[in-house]
Length: 367
Image (cartoon, rainbow, N blue to C red; front, side):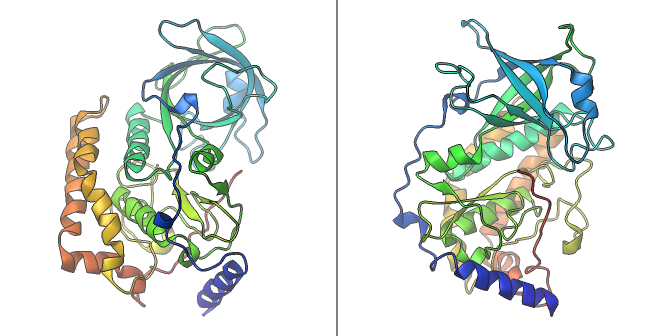
């Protein structure tokens, strides 16, 4: 009863801010090029020099910024160097008992002269580095690549090799090795701008008030990835963008380390969903009157199947066992799309009164 009241309240609250949904294909999607840093899929070599020990220890509720020097090198070009700051970020992965190395937030001062460099136009950048194994980073990175194949409303990621040096310029000892594999994540504001959108900094929006075609595609992608760790109402691992205040927002998902496709050893599904494993797929979209409403999203996935499978078949650094698992997991997803009875059972699940389809995942949001 209380959950129903909360859901109804959220819906009313959302209606005060947005008109009825308008389909995304009626908008002019610009999808201009991302900033220079995210235009390439090549691995970028970074060097971060500073008091690495102090940064790694500073994993409390309010970690401080620490001064560093940030360098990068591109073959055939002189290395570039900038003064910057860095702090630990995140929630789960910053815990020492979970990850050797915490996720970081790089902060390049807006007054720093970066014009003409890869860092032009960059200020705050999320840097995800090897938690316990390099392969986990590659698995999560590949989900961003898959998402990019499906929609321009997705964040770009850039693979990096990061060497960490102490104040004495000596390479620090880090597990499992130094340099660490990682990726930089395109800021959501940049993804919004290249699509002619602005950020929607608003909690309390029901999924029913989002662009239906884009929400359905995002929810289907989360099902593909076997990721249940997201929620629209509190923008948990979700950003919202819109071209105008009176047009319904479009969701952009991020942070996939708790997905079955990544299958991290620490990953667990949200307790509220009563799932035995992150590998158990559950559709967390809205209640649909017909499976036909998902057919446009199905077709987008079908059109990209060869490219998706190619990523998992050919991308370097994945173990043979993981490739076999991932390709089998992908096959199972597409087999479901082609089986009308099984698809109805899976994707009309949010309508079941006895299911967990209407549960709201709040999460912990960090700016």
